[in-house]
Image (cartoon, rainbow, N blue to C red):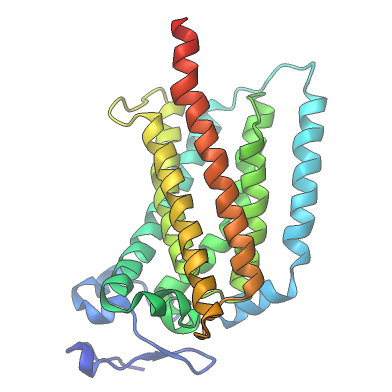
Length: 292
């Protein structure tokens, strides 16, 4: 099928396999079209959404195996020498950073266009199938969701290298995996906010970790800046959850499940507290102890 790009009024929308019409960012800004592959443009989320709906046992099983593996691994390695794995860690962080940058370039401009051209309520309540879940943006949202599985490897490096494993780290990994899987399976209308923010933070964070692994730690980017980005992400996440809950309570149709809103608010709220606590202990209290 051919699509028209003359002006927004004359754009022929794409149609999802489930009958929803949606317009992609490159249709509104034709100069961007060459940056998108045909596969991205024509991505249909039906199969991957149905897969997530039918396989909640996958994240549940992975979480159990993850917890057994990391704590069992720490016990097994207690009296053994740590592995080096510096080069492997550098390569892993570089891969995740590049992947996240690509996801950021696909989702952030899409979200910004939504926020600047639509009423706020529509950006968080319209069906994901219309707002962001299909086509190129939908493809990178899908990759984001399932990338939470390989991201568990982060903890494998910590265990094998015998580095400190804090509660925030493993708690974050298991709750993000469960929440993202549920959000995708239920086609949460608020998801684009969480995906775009997380891609952005991870692009910078993993890039920073890569440079640390190769002994090129950037002096112009203090670690506290990354932590503040994470805290800001959590604040916005809580705000989006509260807004969607209030819209539903007022009788506005909002395409996000109530249990997803509650889980998201609890998750982001707990992250906000834990990241803030981490920041205070590392960047405020710790330097005073050293000075003493």
